[in-house]
Length: 79
Image 1 (tube, rainbow, N blue to C red):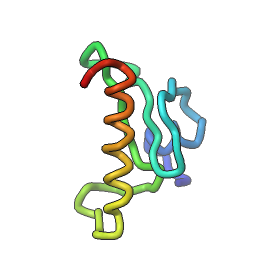
Image 2: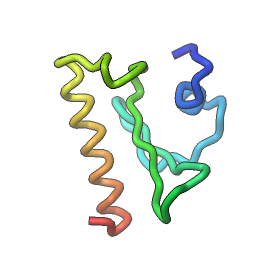
Image 3: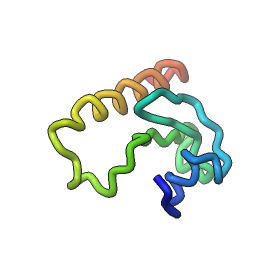
Image 4: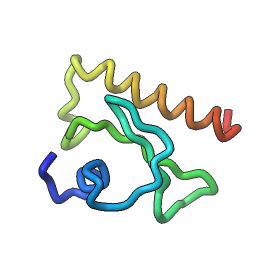
């Protein structure tokens, strides 16, 4: 990481966040300025600058993001 981007700072613990999920690949936290009753951000722990930088080897990471989102949605009764 070592970056001044807000998500990097959140993952590093430099910016407080209310985490609702964390594992080795992804982290999820409540948005501090929610645009909906439930607004959770799910991000990869690996720094990926933009979606165009995704490679085939990132497939497990993308699956992990969706699995986390599904788990959080189910836990909150948003199926």
